[in-house]
Length: 115
Length: 114
Image 1: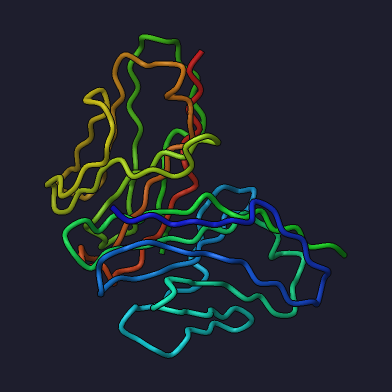
Image 2: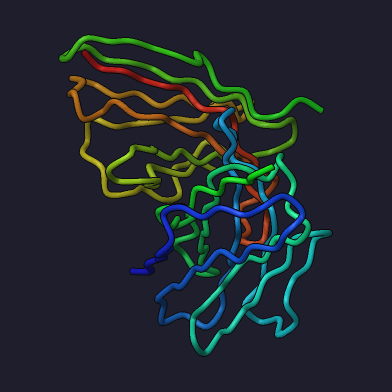
């Protein structure tokens, strides 16, 4: 079974600064997808960024980018120019390409943005 | 386009009762998945439906069941509620059953069992 580990329960960053959230995962599969979701106080999970395991190039979405290290099974999220609206719980998630296609989530990192 | 709608938003039930939660996916989406979120266990997968068929089920007791209707709306039912069933229940819909399809989440139903 796949597992996803987020070792930072809480992080804080100054507005306009850069922060990196860590995520590691364990799998024996070669084809899969990795995601970062954001859950603000409204509770709705919002997709921030996704990475296909077969792609070597790191995904980027505006101020959000990932550092995907397949061999190390590491998938960190970098938020540049942090904004107050970035404050939320961030979840790293894994999805298999195979039969078990449900999302497996990490325990989350609560990000606080300081003005 | 309306997002994923979950009803009700909040629910208080007594131990031993049963409860039904509803999820209306985004129009055109045929895949619906359910997750339970608790402070202790985090986010855990319950089940997935596609075109009215259960495709996958998580490691939950038989008290947890679900179904999907022909219009893709889904319901999940929990019978004989226990205090530990108190959680945020999230529903997610996808256009297809492919792993590459993005999952869009609703705002969840907060269930409190007293």
